[in-house]
Image (cartoon, rainbow, N blue to C red; front, top):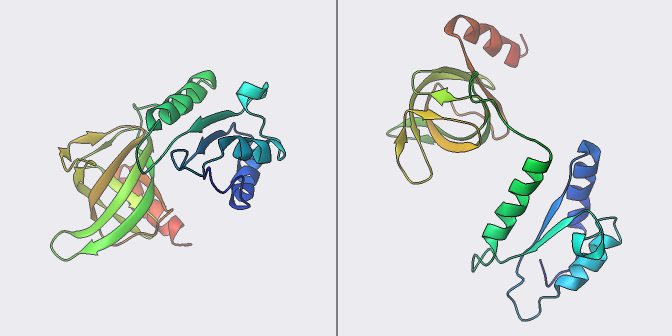
Amino acid sequence: AAGDGGVPRAGGALGHARAAEVPIVVAVNKSDLPDANTDRVRSELADRGLIPEEWGGETMFVDCSAKTQENLEGGLEAISLQAEMLELGANPDKPAKGMIIESRLDKARGAMSSVLIQEGTLRVGDTVVTGEHMGKVRAMIDDRGRQLKEAGPCTPVELLGLGGVPEAGDALNAVEDDKALTLLVRNCGG
């Protein structure tokens, strides 16, 4: 946050990024506030080794405001540029893999899970295994409430059809029917 400087919370994220040896894009939020001091944030993070590009370093900084949505597009462009420079990409032509973001039990619909598809393409009718649960994808709903027949890489969806409510952070895998039980047993420690 532009008013807080490079707070200690940033140290944890910085440590994880360095351990993973990945580049960092810093979004300096709340830059629209009267007490915002984006240079202070840059200075404090520069002291931790994140030298801004505009100072001759390699770290992209984007001043933005989540509340007013000011320059959020600039943040997305910075992330896209990093992905392009690193030649990152996901193969949509393989079985889907994703991550459970959150789950809940809906009285009318059953288990509902927010999933981010990370690679491959998930389709209605696919058999999926996540954590200790499996099922067939009955429906997928996008962030605008539209029903989807398939979801490719980087697509967040609300998934219906699991036999239970998985934990946030569980991996989701689309598998052939005959391999689902084997993967489920492995996930359960068997």
